[in-house]
Length: 522
Image 1 (cartoon, rainbow, N blue to C red):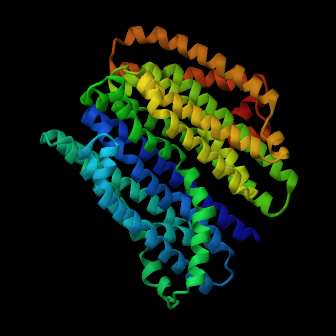
Image 2: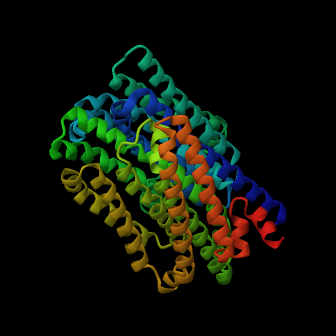
Image 3: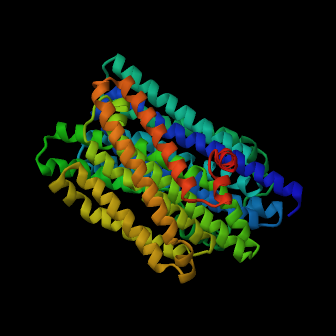
């Protein structure tokens, strides 16, 4: 690969990473003003159906495009790339129609299974988004496959801006006009379709010009081969990208029903589920922080594997694990220690601090699982990944309702943590011995644990002192959380430097790592 092509590839990867980071941040932060507008019950209504959207957009935004780009890149001729795109478009077109009609016809039954028959309108509303899945997945996959990331990046940001804008607008209009919260939810869910339409416009030239350069020809054997690839290796990538959303989907069917079984009224169960769902934006932000910066190491890992540079592959894999584990553990400990302040600042009260704190542990586990999965997939070990994920999902389905019915919402948080633990342990057990040894560094983990414990104790004690001074004032709570969090981050950095937690290469991969290194040398 020439220097010019390499620079072009790295520029594209950077553009896509930044766009993905912006999209993820938008997807997390809008839920705070939304919950503030519609309350816990309104938030419950939206969050019950959100996982359906989340799964669909994960498939269209990251899952299928990543795999499609790999297939496109492997085709040497432009004509073959177009033919493959056409075949994939047909297969995903059939798949999306099946999902669309399944949701339309089964909306009432799905709503009843979720314990709330008034959700059928929201399910029908979000189903229209799936009609655009083939356009988004193939368009993004094609351009990523030819290393043109600009259109994919624009489509990601446009989709989120339009969707989030319509959601907040629907919530505001509903509150001002005293509309039904379920009607508001239907309009909010339709934002997914509006976002998908806007994102699809980025690929107009491809489908109106490039796509038509080759006459479409249906070849049954070729279509079957594409279908097998998409719903084997491609589906594994999709499922792992949607791991947290799949766990949320199980919550949609079991938490509210379990709370009613626990003894709460329907109205109280809806409100409690809405409070429990406050964890989602916090986890998303935690994962953005912990995984976003470490993702810049993935291209280096893939290149080392492709070029059979074993020593470089091991070094990059170790760096990837160290950075992700450290940032995710720090984010988890920080959020747990600051939970009362954060809950007060963002949502106006301190309800279910314990439940939300337990759920925060999923940031650490999900980040480590995602990193481990990246290493396994770079080695082509898809089967190990999917078996581990299925084990975790089956456990969540098996124990969630029971734990909620005997423990309340904290039972759902515990079920999520246990499920993620099963995924991680299963992946580790089924991995080759050299990967297990590579990803375990006892000295690093001891140092990191001590650093995070010290940071957590200081932040928790400081938070407990400040919480008595803010007196339920949201603005002061936010300021106190910012002060405590900044002190905690400073303690983490100082202890990491003192105990040499990171190598020089690892410091350089961290945000502000270069500045910290300069201060160390001084």
